[in-house]
Structure formats: C-alpha cells, structure tokens
Image (cartoon, rainbow, N blue to C red; front, side, top):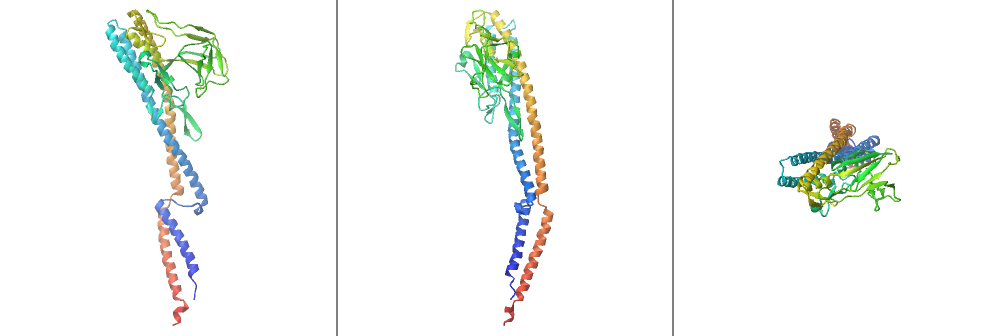
Length: 401
C-alpha cells in the first residue's frame, strides 16, 4: 500500500493557504494580510498608515479651526458694520435739527446695536467662544449684574491666543481676542518711556500678560497665563496719580489716572498697552443721548444742557472712530492668521491624497495577477486531486480479490 495521506495533506494545506491569501487580497484589495507574508512591505505599509492616521486627525482639527476662523471673520466684519452704523447715528445726533426726542430714539437704537456687539463678541462654535483667548470655554463678554443701570460689561478672557497644530510638532496662533475687537489702545509705551493709564483700563504687556493695580493702587502687579498673581509678586511702582472726579451738572465723571515715569528695559522688547473698553464709551454716549451725564460707576446722573450733550457725543464719535480702526487692524491680523490655516489645510489634504496613493501603490492588490493566480490554483487543485485519485488506484487492496 502506498501511504499518500501525509504528503498529500501537506500539499493540500499549502494550496488552501495560498487560496486564502488570494481570496483575502481579492476581497480587501490589499496585497498582504499579515506581517509574515512580507515583513519588509508590512513595515512600510504600517509606517504609511500611521502617517495617514496622524494627518487625518490633523485634518479634522484644521476643518474645525477653519469653521471657527470663518465665524470669527464674519463676526468681526459685522462688528465693523455696527461701528459704522454707530458713527452714522452719532453724526445724526450732532445735527442742529435734532431735538431731545430725536436723540432719545437714537439712544434706543444705540442700545440695540450695543446688544448686537455683545452677541458678536460671544460668538460660539462647537462649544468654543472664539474671542476668549486661550481658554475658549470662557464666555468672552459678561454683563454686570446691574447692567441695565450701569451698562458695564467685562472681558472674562485673556490676551493669549490658542495654539493649534497645523503639522506634527508645529503649532500656530489661532484667531484674535476681544482685546482686538472691543478695546482700543488708549496709551502705549516701551522701555524707558512714560506710561499713563486710567482706572478700568486693562494693561497688557508684550507677551499678553495682564498687569493690575494692587489694592493700595500704588503698584502694578503681573498676572500669569492662568490669570493668577505671580508669587512672589512681580511689581512696578506707580510714580504719580490723579484723583477721580465725580460728574457735575455740566461735566462727565473722570476716572483716576496713574503714571509710571519710565518702564524698565527688561525683558527685551518691553511694551505696555492700556486697553480701553469701548462699551464704557458706548454707555456714556447712550446716557448723553438721553440727556444725562455718566457717574463713575456707569449709572446715569443729572440732566445736562445740550452743549454738554453735544460735547459728549463728539467725544463718543472720536472714540468710535478709534475703536473702528482698532477693530479693522484686528480684522487684518485675523485674516493673516486664517490664511496660515487655509494653507495648512490645503497641504494636509495633499498629504492625505499622496499617502493614499502610496498605500495603493505599495499595498494594493494586483487584481490581474490575482485572477491569473486564482486560475492557476484551480488547475493545481484539479491536478492534485487527479493524482491522489490515481495513487489510490494503485493500492494492493484492489488486487487481493
């Protein structure tokens, strides 16, 4: 008797393995399934797939950033239009033909535009407030609990921009903050220069850190990236100050001012800016349109005559022009940063396309070759089973009868 079982099973198993490989490749479109099929190719494909995954993750982040950037761009454009409308109304209010009733109507319109500015400043996309700085979970502009009386709003964000990955290990600043949208620079000074600012203005240095008056109001103290006072304190002494002045029947209230005679020259590039909250100016304008002066706390004071009202409105017009210029500059900076993300997105899309091409080139199955291999395998199966059948015919048991 000829024992064919072990030898034939060995060949059949080899054919079954080959058949499984061909079936997998034809079904999946991949050249190999396991590392043992071709260790060098397997390592190359793993590397390409890893790069493709990282690039796709970056792509999702860039898509979200583009959506946030586009929303920020539209919001700032709307802000500029609102500021233009405010300027038009202020010019109207200074016409000789405008009486008190007409100005009251303008005040009502101005209140509506103020609400629109606040809404635009709190633009939110996918849970992120776009003008809040580095912590986008924080609402940018918050109304005071007595907002209806004093018109006060506060910027709750910071002067730092959120950094977003545009490539592995490469990050870029995204967007702008409310400092660029709702504040204008009231004063600015560099190393060795005198710096004067008013109470209520936000002091920002060249790195985006905020400096605040201490309780005694005789020093400026530096706060860190998280809004916490440095410990030990980093301080600059106030060299002189002027007292605040309450509103009278013929003048607006005046905030206290503080002066540092010469800013230190360290670190290099030292620059201080006093950021003035435009909403404070807008509140004064609204009160003036209603014939009132504004107290230090923002509430409306005594009724004043038309000359005081008009002087206040002219000042408000000047402040609005400053804010428009500041917002326009911020819009330009936003556009420049947005362009960086647009370019990064285009490069990322190109990388994804190229990685997919390489994966197909190196790891894609050759369907023509697989079809030929499959046909050859079929013929081999037939030949093997024919051989097995013939060998079985040679067994001695057949001749014992």
